[in-house]
View 1 (cartoon, rainbow, N blue to C red):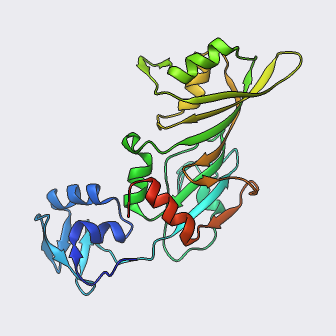
View 2: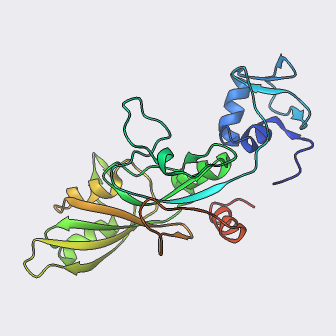
Length: 245
């Protein structure tokens, strides 16, 4: 972690795992941040690790940045708590020294690679379409799409009145009776339930969906419910892919 002795306030808030630097700037302007008891609205304010920094009245502190890759199983919600008592990804995490949050989402009926971290800057960049971080999925669908259908998906397809961006799409296998098939699709956007919506719009509803790749991260070798702490090499690749030093 960079030397925390003296730094700009919005960066300090991000390094504490509260949110991204951009969101931290909003918190400061909104008057929700105080330093040593005084509300601060000046974005250029600098702080050190001996200052008492509070967000919404709660003191925050610098934390080690943690990056966890999880194989999320079907049936778990991508949130850290649920008022209805349903199973969440929090239930699968090992004991960690600081809280982490999911980067993006996988719906309850989907499985696969999920990144969780307290690195707010990275999370923001990985989920912003401007940075075009690729995500690969394997979908089991009804029927067998022909080449014309696959090409429509590659060029972009209209979903809820908005056209999706170009995608990489290929047919992996097809059942001999023609009732179902498996498709690999890579997108660089992150709309809600996008892959399911794209394939439904193409006439091939998804029966099951697994995310296998997220940027430089791969699911290969992991079992459902398994978590791994990322090493420095993969963290560096991930941050580089997101445009961070």
